[in-house]
Image (tube, rainbow, N blue to C red):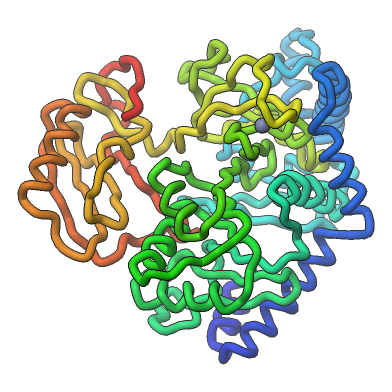
Amino acid sequence: MNRSIINLYQSLPYPLRSAAASTWGYYLRWLRYSGETETLAAEALERDHWSASQWRNWTEERLAYTLHRAATRVPFYRSYWSERRARGDRSSWERLENWPLLNKESVRQSPEAFVADDCNIRRMHVWFTSGSTGTPLRLYWSRRNIRRWYALFEARSRRWYGVSRHDRWAIVGGQRVAAIEQKESPVWVWNRGLNQLYVSAIHLSPALAHASIDAIRAHNLKYIVGYPSALQVLAQYAQQSGVTLPMSVAITNAEPLFDSQRDIISSAFCCPVRDTYGSAEVVAGAGECECGSMHLWPDTGIVEVFNRNHDPAPQGLPGELVCTGLVNDDMPLIRYCTRDSASLPDPRERCGCGRNLPLLGKVEGRLDDVLVARDGRRITRIDGIFKGQLPVREVQVIQEAIDRIRVVYAAEARLSPQCQRDLTKRFVDVFGETSLQFDWVPQISRLPNGKFRSATCLVPPEDWPPKKVSSHV
Ligand SMILES: [Zn+2]
């Protein structure tokens, strides 16, 4: 939304803010849903139980249509293929493996070049991705495709968990429902149009978080959605105050979910935690079922895994998720590099829930957040180092040099010297001989989109030691 409109909104007294958010919510409801939504959602739920051959036929047909449309109607791909043809390359564009990998930067530079030429761009809806760094991406969507996507989302992100968009719910996210510098409650807003309490994930100081907890309790909500880091903070404060926030389900997204976070969120909200995976570009989707498996949504996108050399990774090994979106055929993104790391288990593996959807291995996190040990091992997860009863709310690890790590932590009090020594030993066990610095802060700041970055590597890739096997701690 336009910056001046956001400033105007933020200057309003709360009742007018809620009225403005609700008006926006009614517009979004019209944009996202129609009389067709229920039918489309029911069809998606039926597809959950399709056989492998039904899925193969469906995705092959949809992929063939998407590739054909991209190669013949989308300026970026049309010129790509005509260059190849001019070089005498006769490879078929009907085969996905013949397509190049696409990185975010190419889309960022000229998003309009990815829009099919039979679309009227001025009549399309623009989505801005809430990128953690750099300029956001502009994505063009028709209303028809928006509604197809939200029907899929309704089916797999809500109906799977026994809730619907008609229930009252809360989302904890990065939208500017209050000014960043705001120190007083409310840092949330009730959006009547979407039956939604929007709680700011950026305002999580103790006083504001407690006020948001009171709002969640007062609004009589059925489920809550949010980043694991934000739900964790609310859950911790709720537990400290001796209150619970009973929900039917807590649905996490956008960040890796650690076991310790799952435990505390589940306990404070008295419900199961279901993790989901997706991307703002809508090139893939996945959600956790009641058996704890992460199922891919094959009708959202085709997922491949690539290693660092941009070759397909062997079955079961982790690598970068490279996805071909099947929903937004007006702006097709083929083999789009997500920068997320995960693996694909054997496609024949079945889950006890009875759904016939392929599985996605644990999403390890962003490739941009990988740390590096002195012997060259890539460290993709560090939550294991902090296992145990540490008196901290949140931790952020910043690798400033190959042998220097800064640990920023939010806690009631400074860590004791003994605790710091124990943690140093654990870090040295993982990273090799490394100096540690511990910085105590009242609250760890969020990225502009409200997400929490648990690991940051400031060592330039050219200074990394040669790679060994990656390690998860
Ligand atoms: Zn399952």
